[in-house]
Length: 269
Ligand SMILES: NC(=O)C1=CN([C@@H]2O[C@H](COP(=O)(O)OP(=O)(O)OC[C@H]3O[C@@H](n4cnc5c(N)ncnc54)[C@H](OP(=O)(O)O)[C@@H]3O)[C@@H](O)[C@H]2O)C=CC1
Ligand SMILES: O=C(O)C1=N[C@H](C(=O)O)C[C@H](O)C1
Image (cartoon, rainbow, N blue to C red; front, side, top):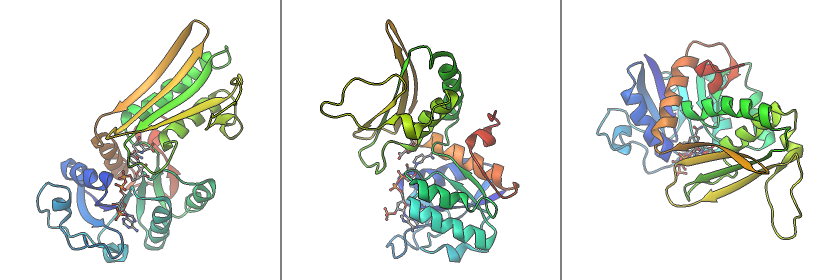
């Protein structure tokens, strides 16, 4: 049984993760962490998740879990995740990281832990999105240099704080890489006013924030006369949470390194 602690346990993903761990026969709930000073410290994490008492009280400091936990699952915010990685390096723990919205510098800092912490870091833990990344590779290789314009459109709930989503950026990177393009050079993240016609090689991004949309991503390949759209729609956060628990079980016996969901699912090249 993999002993898992959930950081950000009172959040949208945190509460869903409590359910997912509880439903997984190979994993057990060893702890839940809320923000330092939170009034939710001491509350049973099963109650936080709406599934009744589980006998595990939320704590507001990771130190309290140092002896009890093998893998941390962290869906919080960039700075919180980086500080938790330092804890894992110090205490020999493993980590599954779902947090998105990191800057290039923050990703470099995360990467600096790859020799000290076994970690799975992926902007989307669902099986469907990770399969979609493979489909995008195939589509981009077949179409991208044949005059097809590529656009990435994503929609999420009104509470999401980062844009474009981590998944949209990953999709853009996969497509760009398949075409030998650099997303830093060819990504277009804003069009407003007299911005002129698109260039052939740009990869455009558009963001929708509305209501309770769990997460939807479309990559469009459009040319004169036809358009192909590859779409993934998540209708429940459980799809991300189940993937994260699967990743936690997978990373429990891995050496230090930075892995992603393609590794976990055996979808790598
Ligand atoms: N990889 C994937 O598959 C997915 C990734 N995500 C990503 O996960 C992240 C979280 O998303 P979501 O659950 O919707 O966001 P929420 O805001 O609902 O949850 C984040 C939680 O982290 C808590 N938190 C903040 N600081 C700390 C701290 N120091 N210690 C412990 N907990 C802390 C927050 O508490 P408080 O509210 O009190 O600040 C909040 O409860 C985002 O980056 C999102 O993009 C989301 C879904 C899927
Ligand atoms: O914040 C969310 O909700 C989600 N975030 C992830 C992202 O930024 O790609 C994954 C998922 O789409 C939900």
